[in-house]
Length: 331
Image (cartoon, rainbow, N blue to C red; front, side, top):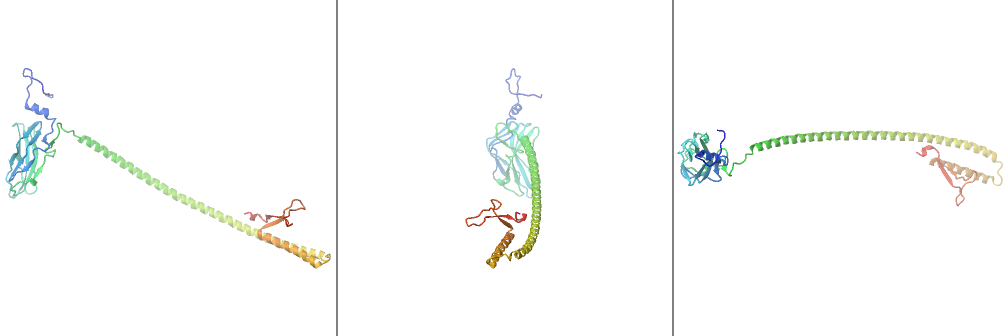
């Protein structure tokens, strides 16, 4: 029958229940194992151990130890090591739940304790493993390994219902986190690559900028050098021309002066020497003024208000205005 249910009142003895029905009813409500802190195995002198009082639950069948139970272990070998198991067995065939010692095999090195028997009719839970070295005459607590906390061997019955298994949820969450971490790693790698590429671009930009800046500096430097060279050449040419003009002016005026002197030397009256000296001083002053204007590069003329009239200062001296001799002065 694929469907079963329980429990209902009987009518005319149509509802008959077995112990199995009762065990099946409680089976999903309690996890097989021992109740928290119960049924501890401790040394009890000699080759004996003791199981303390408490409760156990196996596949819906309860076990209650009301008094401490002493179990005798097999005598240790003189030259071989052994490991025994203290178990509580559910036996559906014999219809009982009991505690006893399962004696292990003998090993020259590290012994292996017997595994719990779990079949359709037998289910054992392991309370402890006891490691008996060769020549042991008394069991100590250090030889007893408490296995009540192991889910695969025994486990705790800590709640009124079986705890929810989070294995699948945990596995799914771990898978998600692993995938998420992979995604973050990929994004971080992309970010690092992007940062490196941008750094390369920035370094290239800085290099190009420096090269362009240097090229522009060299270009303007060359242009300024050429400009000053042109100014120097033009200034030298203008200076030579002005010097030549002055020489020609001197020669011309000297010839004119001698010619003029020949014309007027017979017309001086009174003190000819004094008048002549005045004329010489006047011409010398004009020449000195011309030399000064030459060195300064400026020609000074009287500030005229009309063709024959000019402006004078408080001392009666004409007010002069200057203008450059050549265009190079403005540069």
